[in-house]
Length: 477
Ligand SMILES: [Zn+2]
Ligand SMILES: [Zn+2]
Image 1 (cartoon, rainbow, N blue to C red):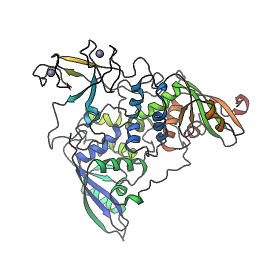
Image 2 (image 1 turned 180 degrees about the horizontal axis):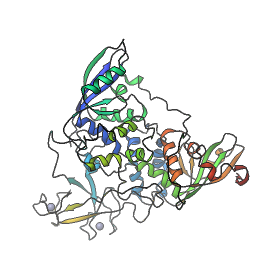
Image 3 (image 1 turned 30 degrees about the vertical axis):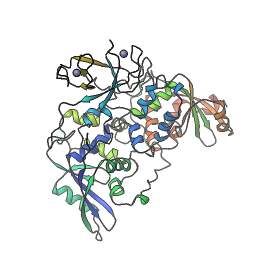
């Protein structure tokens, strides 16, 4: 797939050196919208682990854990390069920040009975062999020039503000935006820029850390381009509103709290809590923003999400399904964990076909059955997509782990604890994590560097969990 470049018309205030707004067609906006389908782990990876979300440490922890802490070799890969439900659709974008990865699959090199397909190289086939034969998805119906977009209809052009509000173009919109932004000293000029893959990845990165994404990419020199520091005194103002039903699904952990500073030093937990944390990396950003009622604190993406559900954009989507990919992204198949405390829907099972010709070496799978293979036979072998985690229902192995306040995950080794518990006034507090706490954790992980403290010690829910009665119940470490 060759990546093209897209044209963006910037309206700039030269005096303040700021992009007032940009104008583009559906192809550019389609790419912006695709950011909502990307898993958080992908946002971290494409930002070179400088997303400034609290998830950077989590991502590095997955890289740092040794193989013995993953049930299969593919579990780590699923977290570092998570797939997502819209990735085949996103192959039609003119610029795809993820490249071609959704096209590559692996099958068993033996013509074996199981007929399995996996996205993870060298996963183990049920026959015992390593699935090492690479196949590519042949896409029969590639998008034709100038037809409808991936998410949007053909019709219109769009105005995009510096902080990612998207509005269909109209004279009134432009007048309003100019009216709001222009001061008496403004010198408004227009500038046309081409946006290729590297610019698009910069736009994605800036959209996570700044409310001036376009200005930072197109107007400010690289050296000036320091990320704006996030508010370090972040705390939950109002927790997500949820019905407080009976707490059936609970994961118990122990918080080691510095009583004097009212701060979590670390949490001691088993694999269930680590699975919950690591699964954050696999959540599409649109899913997260939806779960947090539109307020994820990911700088520009909340505005983008707000635009998708806004009235002016209502008629712009190709189909209801294309809008739902952005507003209610599904969790990819096989990415659920056994203690999945946040409600979600799994993506539909895609169908993949090959021909049955012995020795056919075309190395293509088709999304349609009964079409012609390159060897001129019919693709009538339906491949089963295997669960790359084999029999386990989590990402990590059974063990005791510790998680620091800024989400560094390590196995529990006494040596690592010595320095951490050298503080006086530490108490160990048993703590139950249910759906409410997972949402608080997710929200804090996106906006704080003291994630466990902000999620578990400052919300109202903590009183139910026993922190208020810290003097009575706690065990001194
Ligand atoms: Zn096999
Ligand atoms: Zn063939």
